[in-house]
Image 1 (cartoon, rainbow, N blue to C red):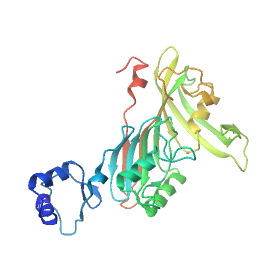
Image 2 (cartoon, rainbow, N blue to C red):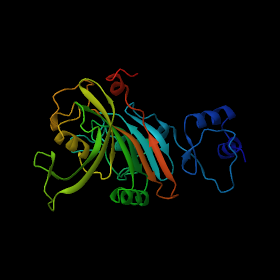
Image 3 (cartoon, rainbow, N blue to C red):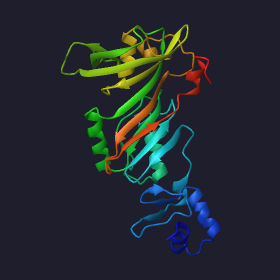
Image 4 (cartoon, helix red, strand yellow):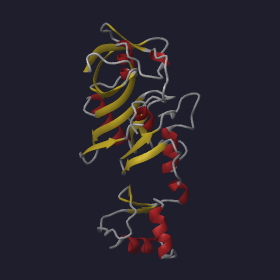
Length: 279
């Protein structure tokens, strides 16, 4: 059955124009995924849902959906936006916005946290939409089987131009992560980097993570004498792009239910490129 005919059967009082508007406004889901094609042929087992208008409200400018299905939602987070609530900030976070997007129910967190990006780091994030998906994704992060690539703007030129940092990272009382000897409270961290652009004062790096420790990239680059620009906590004294020079460019993982390998990318921010004369 064509999608439009199925909608007409579900909402017999609506005109065809109204039904097409529902589709274009993202209010129709098939098997948990937003569907906008009025000509799609539905199979007998397909589940068609129509959300309320309030659930189809646009997300704020700092958040964009890259992918959504019944188990996961992948977003592009802007710098300056918290991933999850803190004691001081409960409402303006990626998790809170997505809970509202899905139709927040009192006492229920529909968006399940899998991993985080620092407030000032932009890029790709995945959230789970149920407990099973969350645990399956967390297992992948714990096993370091998730693909993660970042773009970092650092002070100076790396020598050598590509390499690997390995250390035991431990959190100090001031919340700063530092390398030190092996310790029960320290976690082993491995960071690979490759220089992709250079100027007189700065370098653009592609950074891939073998492990995912708190502030891992920031700590390793700072300790190498090349802090990320705008990162005062880790020793940077310059801020040529008016933000932290760190962006989560790529995230790849195995879908927690289908097992399909998914990869999502986010373009390098224009301010990063302009620093090297690239638009």
